[in-house]
Image 1 (spheres, rainbow, N blue to C red):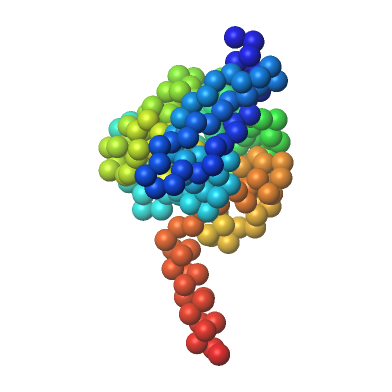
Image 2: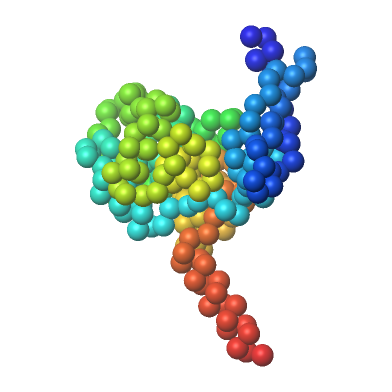
Length: 238
């Protein structure tokens, strides 16, 4: 047990070639090898190759966010989804979200962050404020029953109801739109798409460094199309 509590370092085996069996990756701690296990994918999302997958991280299109909202069954579910997306919350921050931090008149929230992230007064959208008004108590936790585990399970079910692609049982796959952290990545990407500066996005996500924020950004179809149009104009101008 003490070894399992140690900080584990994942040492990746060389990437598997086509037709080869998965090579084992080794988990080590300060006391030596804990266990050796087959790598989950030996692809871009695996171990030491994770950095190569950052550009492939999935993000939700705005139309997919609309499908998720339409798939919510209760006012509480809609309030949860809008709040998590709008404030770019981690799943674990939802249970800590308190009514005292919300000013519906000014439409601001003093969002408390995990991982010792800074607390800022963040603006929220009119629809988010209206959704919160429907369910928010006078004081205390706004969503007391929504633990991180419950939110993860609910979000996977919501993705399935909305008909979005998901890979059950592989929550860290970069292309998996059933992994709830995609809401946080999508919010960051959509803000940049709308013209927000990286520093502003960093503030909303509660990151200490803009470098961390940069790792969250993906590409929506709109951004890809805009990039292609800019590139074409550059060539045509020659």
